[in-house]
Length: 247
Image 1: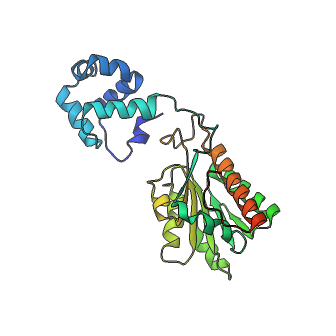
Image 2: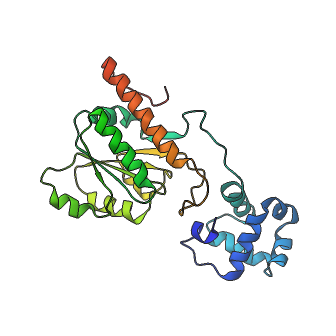
Image 3: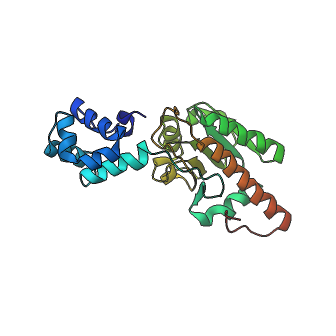
């Protein structure tokens, strides 16, 4: 995983990149050796490494090393055995989302790998009778101009929640009375923060924007969507509201 992508918002010099890559290669050894040994190995000095940590918004050397260890170097735990791969934000919006499937006109959007999930959701909505359309192009405003009947809800799938396509749609929807529902791996992303309902999907490779490493995120999206459908079918059969996604 490229460290330059993770810290893309910060301009790093060659020595700083060398230090980060040294930590990434063996964080345990770096902790054992200490900051002075790492600085010497990278032709730097301890004060420069402390400044680097502060530059990256960490409190110091230890927080920087532990961040790299647990978020980049170490493999993430697989959680397919439970439903903890998905959280709804805010949770009280779930019944409203399920009820909307009966009456809303829904537009689904995804770009790149997220197109696959958007296509899956669209196909499943077709066979279950939900009034849905699919849009894979990046410009929502042009689409809106061509449609005389407005959409009631927009469903956007974006792993990072900050892709240019997703953010263009968020900007285009600003000020409109259109529900925004999203599937994303980052609850702090601009997309999740803008959405009326965000389905936060477990993403073990949050910083892998190129989707290079093996990652169950997109599989979890399908599992999470199918879980929603199960709750919707149960609600439709009983006529009772559904209060929790964890059943």
